[in-house]
Image (cartoon, rainbow, N blue to C red; front, side, top):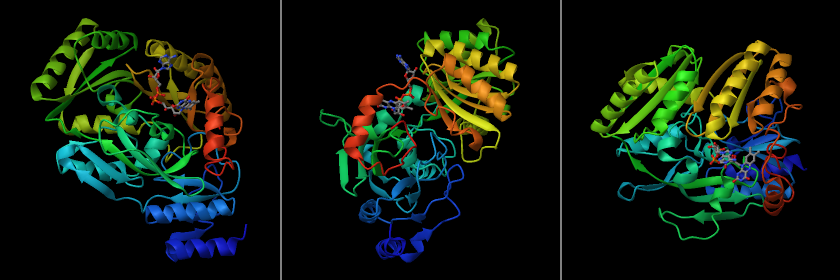
Length: 426
Ligand SMILES: Cc1cc2nc3c(=O)[nH]c(=O)nc-3n(C[C@H](O)[C@@H](O)[C@@H](O)COP(=O)(O)OP(=O)(O)OC[C@H]3O[C@@H](n4cnc5c(N)ncnc54)[C@H](O)[C@@H]3O)c2cc1C
C-alpha cells in the first residue's frame, strides 16, 4: 500500500481534518487502525471505500463504537470508516409515519426528533446516545420491546448501502408495503458490516403511546416468575415487554420479572391490575412503576448488554434458544456460575427466547462457565471477551446455521474479504 498517496487522496476527498493516521481511538481488542476516515456524504463514503478497496485495505465500519467487541477481532490490518458525520434526517413526513435517516445518526438523536412529533421508532439499544442506526442494524440488536413492536427486521422498509467496491446500492423504499420479491435489505441485518457499509435506512414509525407503566414482580427464586411468564403468555394481555431479570440492582431482588405496558391509559391500567392478580396467584409480589422509576428500570435493562466499557475480567454473551427452553438454559447458566464461582447478571426477553448475560471471574473460571453454557445453548454469541481469551473462544457458538449459504453470499458481495475481515462467521 502506498500510504502517502492514499492518505493524500482521502484528505482531498473528505477534508484534511477528517483523516487521521494511526488514531489512538477506535482500537479493537488492542489492535489499532492504520487510519480513520470520516466521510461527510454518501458520495464521499462511496469514494473513500473505493479508494481503500483499490489499495486492498481492509475496512471496519465504525458507528458509535458501542458494539465493536462483538464477534472476533479483525484478522488483518484495517482502516476504520467512521459514520459519525452521516447523521442527518434525509426525509421525514410525520403524516406518512416513515423516516429516512443516515446510518451515523444515534438512536437517541432519532428518538428526540421523533418525540417532537409524538412518534417513535420502538427499538431499544444499550447506550442510545452513542449507538448508531447503522450499528444497530449491522448487529441485529434487539431490545425488550421487540415482543410488542417487532425487531429492526419488522420496522426497516428500505436501506442504502455502499458495497466493498464503493458501489452504491439500495433495497426497499419509503413505502410501508413494498412490492414482493427477494428482500435484499434483510441480508444486511446482522451481517456485522461484512457485506456492505450501511449508509442510510428507512423505517416505519409508531405513534408514541399515551400512557406507559411497568409492573415489577420480585421473587426469592426463579420458578414462580416462569409460572407468571406462562400465565401472561397464555392470557389476552398484550404487554410490549416481558423481561426476566437476575441480579439487576434496580429490580431490588435476586430474581424479578418486569412487564412493560404502553398504550391507552385504560389498557395500561388493565395490565397493572391483571399482572398483579396473576403475580399473587403464583405467590409473587408486584409493584407498579410509573414516570421516572419506570424509565430508569428500562434504561438499566437496555444497558446491561453494553460492551463499550467492559472490565478486563468480564464476559458478555447473547443466548438465543427456543422460548420454552429459556428457563432451563438460564438455570443451567446460573448453576455453572455458582460452581465456577463467577458472578452473573442476566436480562432475558422471556417470551422471545433471547437472553443477555454478564459474567465476571478469572480467565479459567470464565472459560469453564462458557464451555458449560455452550453445552446447553450452542447458539451463544460472544459480545465481549477478555482479550486473553478472544482467540480461543468460539465467538458464534458451536451450532452455526446456514454457514455455506453465508459463505456464498460473502464471496459474491466481497470476494477480497475487505469488509470486517475475521469479525463474523464468514
Ligand atoms: C451464528 C450466526 C448465524 C447466523 N445465520 C443467519 C442466517 O442464516 N440467516 C440470517 O438471516 N441471519 C443470520 N445471522 C445473522 C443475524 O445476526 C441473525 O442473528 C439475525 O438476523 C437474527 O434475527 P432475529 O433478530 O430475528 O433473531 P434472534 O434475535 O437471533 O432470535 C432468534 C429467535 O428464534 C427463536 N428460535 C431459535 N431457534 C429456533 C428454532 N429451532 N425454532 C423456532 N424458533 C427458534 C428464538 O427463540 C428466538 O426468538 C446469523 C448470526 C449468527 C451469529
